[in-house]
Structure formats: C-alpha cells, structure tokens
Length: 144
Image (cartoon, rainbow, N blue to C red; front, top):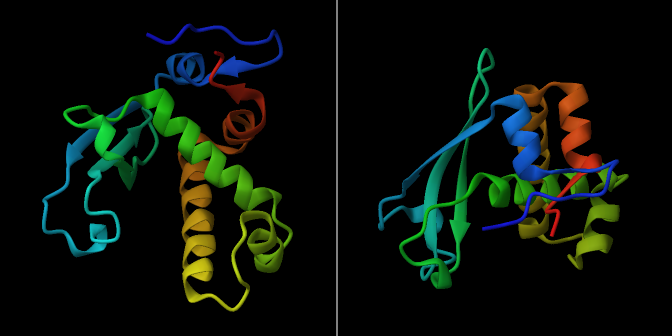
C-alpha cells in the first residue's frame, strides 16, 4: 500500500481524489478491440472518472503484462493523466511537444499523440474545473 505523504505544499493523488470525492470505474476491454492492437500483451480498460455533479470522463487506460489480474488504481490513473496533461500544457506548440518527447515533427503518429493529449487535458479540465485541474497538474505527486 502506498504511503499517503507529501510535502506541505503538495498533495498526493490519493488525497486529491479523496478530498474531491473522485471515483474511478474500470472494465476490461474486449480482446479483439482493434484500437488496442498496438500493445497486444497489455491489459486494456475502459475507465470512467466520476465526480458528483459533473459529466464523467471516459477514456482508455492500459497496463503492461506485469499487471495481470489487476485493475487500475485511481492514484496511478491520475498520475498518468496529469503527466500527459502537464506535457501538453507545457508545450508552446506541436513542435515544442515533439522536441520534448523525441518525436519527429513530420510524424503522423506524433501528431496523433499530441492531439490525444490535448483532448485528454481538455476533458480532465471539464471534469475537475480550472482550479482543481491546475492543482492536479502542478501541486500533486505520488508522495512516496
């Protein structure tokens, strides 16, 4: 079990979720889903982040084969979503994003990843609202 500790000015993902009443549901994706073929040995889930009074955020989440038989945990999911959103928010442009993550700027795959990060960031902001979204990105961590 992860300790729930952080520096005084930072909050753990677990504490952040608890404070807001944020919940996660996850159901394993069907094995033949075409969109999951790029990582066939992983475990893929259709997840929903739920915050009372707000429209839920539904998304795909994958875990490597070492996680067999496990479901995603809320703090791990928040860490991944926050990392992707922070990378997108920190980039001044697509070219900047590519430079930061080692993509070629003429790559269709890079553009697809950049746009997906942007859509995810926007959906997360809609779910949490501006203040909590910013807090998640810049004032939370694993607290290990």
